[in-house]
Image 1 (cartoon, rainbow, N blue to C red):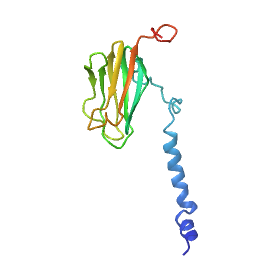
Image 2 (image 1 turned 90 degrees about the vertical axis):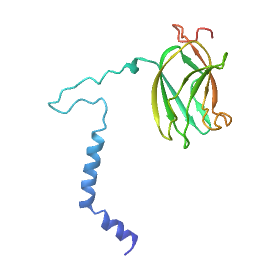
Image 3 (image 1 turned 60 degrees about the horizontal axis):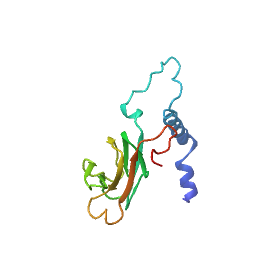
Image 4 (image 1 turned 120 degrees about the vertical axis):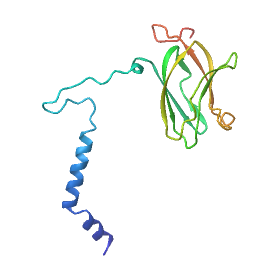
Length: 157
């Protein structure tokens, strides 16, 4: 029996049709924001406190911390993602005093995502993964938290 025969006998039209139907059913359930099915009533999505907060994406990978160089002051939602294959953590230090102002609760496993809320004061900071020797290998970045002016620019340029 050739590979052509094996493929054609495995995937006959009668076997493929149920697979296609199941796939279409799954895909149709993935539509976000679509009108409800006939007779259904639309309900509002659950309100979350974090949706009103500015969101800051921070990616941790070997061996880099990827984030914006400027963050807003006040309450922010940090969306952390470990995109690497090793465990990582993150800590924020005030540059002027080298005092820690925030750190993750334990390490993030590979592929793990977390959202945390943090109230940032204006100032210069350093973000560091201080697990193992990651800081020495480049997982350190400096950033500034500053209030935004009405034009959207930073207050001190």
